[in-house]
Image (cartoon, rainbow, N blue to C red; front, side, top):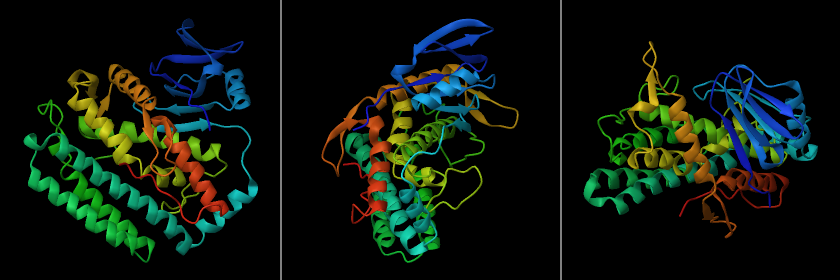
Amino acid sequence: MKKLLNTLYVTIPETYLSLDGENVVVLKEKQEIGRVPLHNIERIMTFGYLGVSPALMGKCVEYGIELVFLSPYGKFLARVEGGISGNVLLRREQYRIADDEEKSLEIARNMILGKLYNSRQVILRVLRDHELRVNVEMLRKKAEFLQKSMEKCRNVKNMESLRGIEGECASVYFSVFDEMILQQKQVFHFTVRSKRPPMDQVNALLSFSYSLCTSMCASALEAVGLDPYVGFMHSDRPGRRSLALDLVEEFRAWMCDRFVLMLINKKVVNADHFEQREDGAVLLNEKGRKEVLAAWQKRKNEMIKHPFLDEKMEWGMLPYVQALLLARYIRGDLDTYPVFMWK
């Protein structure tokens, strides 16, 4: 099993990363402000524009360390990778499935089933833990809708219908997201999902966590030999990591939405962690990014029991494990893709 190592998050935009021996050195105004041994790192995510030295890029490629560039507000820009890895026969089979709607539908259906199941579990967990503080009837009604939609999803006949079910369920799920926010309601209130750009604090947190999770999924798919840019539900588009977007669907509610609710309800973040731009967009500021990333890294080290493998593992290993199971299904080692369903 792959070992979960650390992710180095560089949140100060005015930094430059360089190499010194076997260490990554963080420079600001040509002064060293940090140094980390490369052997402790599996991923570097930098939220800035000044860049990285060619020597460090080369060493990251040599050691298999993922190097991801994001804007200061968490928008994915690019990632550095070496030669394409993985079994060519596995990728050829992936491409054949992607060109066959019936076979693609079988995988996509399972992923969306996982998304609906996990979304329902998030609602049920809030009902169980905070019954006296929420609108029980409304939440149970939405959970029941998601349950019925899962039955429709199992019997769906084409990708267009599947996308329709997923979109409708997302709308229903987010219609009660504000009800699950129990603290700091004067700052954190949710009405509708806004993505590009996020128009309130809750959407800013959701978009940021989705970006982190999608990067993890893309890296995991690459690690097991799959092409993260060729998906089954998300169509091909230049520069879009379609398979990573497919895979992240089953993690959105369990990994990201619950994480955002925890940040708010446990007061890890507050109004001082955000800034508003002239166009109305609300984004995490540098202080906010540091708090969220520290909490994300801590959460990645928590232990869970995988429902299919029946093994304990770190929370942060889930994208890699699911990518591995997907690769095994594509190779023909499994009869179906065992989507992650949180219990």
